[in-house]
Length: 229
Image (cartoon, rainbow, N blue to C red; front, side):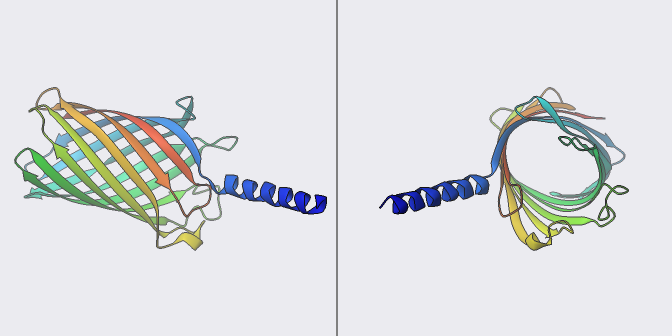
């Protein structure tokens, strides 16, 4: 009888360990974003973004990136853009990770009086640690689809809700998860127009990861400032 109890206790211990390992870690972060847009003509805009992200409950640097590109807005309700992003990823007890990303966006927006719906498709490719890793020169590919629902409460105040799905098309470091959905972002926030060319925004974002190694759920407070020239 005692042997049976000991076996059950050992079994429960290992089961609890496995459950603990399987559960994703959780973290809170702060994303601070500056956006700038310069109108070249009636169809083309230059776009620039600088973003600083904190992690470990706002106490540690997570990453810093600079993003710049060109946007075509010459078609009604449709925009497309190509951008390059330089990323510095701060890693615990590891060297700074330098990453380079290219993105192609295609978005469609439809308005219904004060309500609007926007769909954005993003194809993204990125290389990591180009000179310090044997896989650094092999790009990873992701497909991202985002839906945003916005309502104009007042002329200058526009709350919104959004959801984004990210699928791993190809990653040389984790090929087992290729062609699988592995991340969903849920977001609510509001944009406040300070004038015709300036906007501030605040949002709350939940990032849910699944089906990958080292899953992590993130709870993000976001602050944005955007200006047009």
